[in-house]
Image (cartoon, rainbow, N blue to C red; front, side):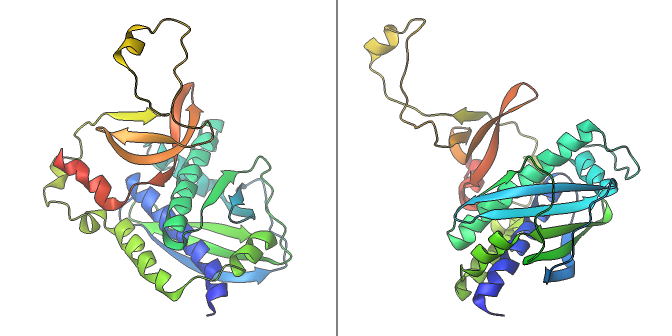
Length: 286
């Protein structure tokens, strides 16, 4: 396969690996993903129905275009239930609560895709859920069907459609052959984080230890007289621009960066960059 064509497949495989990583973090063991319908050009319309859910992502930064995922509601509701730590019931109603949880699940997967894609290719991208749920145009698009399996949920199928603009951008971005080595490393890390982090065999004993997590918008050094001079209405200017990502610190160590969001009236952080595995493993030294 030519390197340029391979870049489209690599983008699809990044989604596959991200699904596995997020699902395993939600308690689904040994997730495997395979393309039951391989990636191919399509001119046929993508049929959506009342039984299906469409999630379309707008791709920006170094790539432009959109990518849409389509799945049956019985599949979507199981992803929502996993996120909410509920028992899986594919026959459950796809309620507004489940719809919101499903969207949040996809945001987590997309965030992992963006992080892994930049780490592997050096090309930063943003993946934002589009307001319009319609799938992209199919003339000149590429489509494939991903099947995810686990002991937790059996087989779940989703269809991916990449619009022509995104396909053209990927095709114009050849990837070096040596990029396959980091990809293999990333896949191995997702499959077995303990192996890549050289974690101790009794790690399970530490997983329930609580650590303090802090979101930092910026910082500055202040003279003691400035501290004593603080009063209501004082503005403290930080060293960070408003369009720069906030930082997530765990036990005082920088672990991730991302966009500040509001979830159910509370502040949250949508992660866009994650520290290297060995840096996160340093938390074990605390």
